[in-house]
Image (cartoon, rainbow, N blue to C red; front, side, top):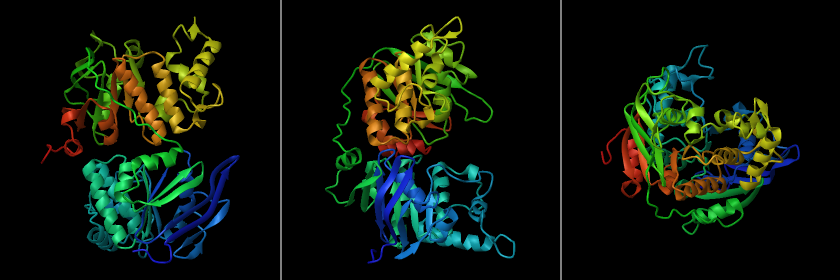
Length: 505
């Protein structure tokens, strides 16, 4: 499909934020029919570059051409006029409205009236061309995560996009939904569209793209054709700038039960209800929790962390039945917690790092006596963790929110590991992290496993779960539908269970 004139050309793009050079003379070329994988560690400059292309930022220097013609993109509306559409990782949908109403938001209509018939016709065209069918009258709140993702893509196609930017498009999809998305992308490029595919899942990049561009420290370090000799390991090394050694998971015999959940039900208003949940976590094993987002994983984590009290059922930690559910009580019994939302639930971004890392244990004798804080002890503790975990922070008093995602995750892990938990509960522990930071986190979990601690990893990344887990529990609509030893688990089987179907159905 490639022609001699690129559908998109970005040349010598430069952008600085104060002393930080986010983009330095970046070139990007995209032809009709290309799927370009845009890769790089967190902070490499990918997001800044795409924000310039989509009109959120203005470049300090450089220029953009669409189909060989120079353009100036002032904002996202302007980008759409030029045929550029962006599908963000977090969806921008009106959940109480229908599919059709979401497609019509912001469009002028005809004589002041919504052009519903025209919209239905355009929706049929998109379905016929790209097999992206949705019931136009379905309410968004009733759609699955995969269907909501489909609607976001339909929205940009509906507005005439010929260049699509997809940011972590499979983050919350089952393997089957991801493959359906890839089929649609292949149909799009067959029709001459061009796609920029941003993902931390290197196996997906290898599967769907024909070209790969790697960024590091704001610069392009490699642009290459996605040929059979390009391995995931080679891409990872280009991203990190050094050789990566995959973590080893040696055989290990699980020991006694550390956490036992029996017949737990919840009925909190406005939350997914847990329905007869039973799960046993032993010392020396990693339990993976798989499931499409919103099927009870967060509620399960909140019960284990003491945030949510079950309406019935029991929970035992190291043989002690829990009678009072509170985060402090769970800490006392040895539950370490890395929550899903590290920016709000995990750490206080507006406070100094020393306060964020000490706050959950602020009443311990190590940090306070008779209600008086021991600031010297707190600072010493945090400085030790910064050094031990190689957290990139100027000092213990740096504002927490200035740290990168990977360093925030390191700070959370350091805080919890300092108290040597019996069971570590980690929800989406590597979401948004680059491959180097993710590998650091995985090594910590494997080290805990080797010391006969229990680890629960809740993740929507099946590759992560298959690499780490000794057993995988699959959740669907508040239930654990299966618990599979890793030797019996396959991506297809787990994917079917995540979708509420029996494996092989």
